[in-house]
Amino acid sequence: MSGRVFVLGKDGKPLTPCKASKARKLIEGQQAEPIWNKFGEIGIQMLVETRNETPKVVLGCDFGTKFEGYSVLSGTENVL
Figure 1 (tube, one colour):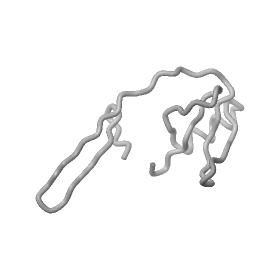
Figure 2 (figure 1 turned 180 degrees about the vertical axis):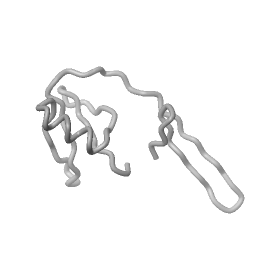
Figure 3 (figure 1 turned 90 degrees about the vertical axis):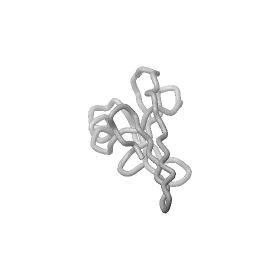
Figure 4 (figure 1 turned 45 degrees about the vertical axis):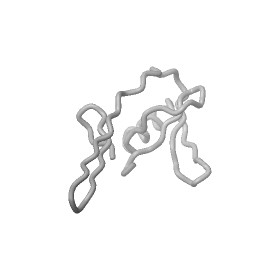
């Protein structure tokens, strides 16, 4: 996910990942706490209620003659 941190809601359900700088600000503001998953990756769990909306994500595929390309887009941001 290239620099992204996974986020869990107050109820433990997964939310949209955020940048490490945003996660650090949420931890310092005592709105989230750091957690680790079974793979040793760090993430955050929110301590306050958040919106439960999930953004629309689109998968783009380019089947070229020599190389194949894939892209995951969320709005104007290239996620992967």
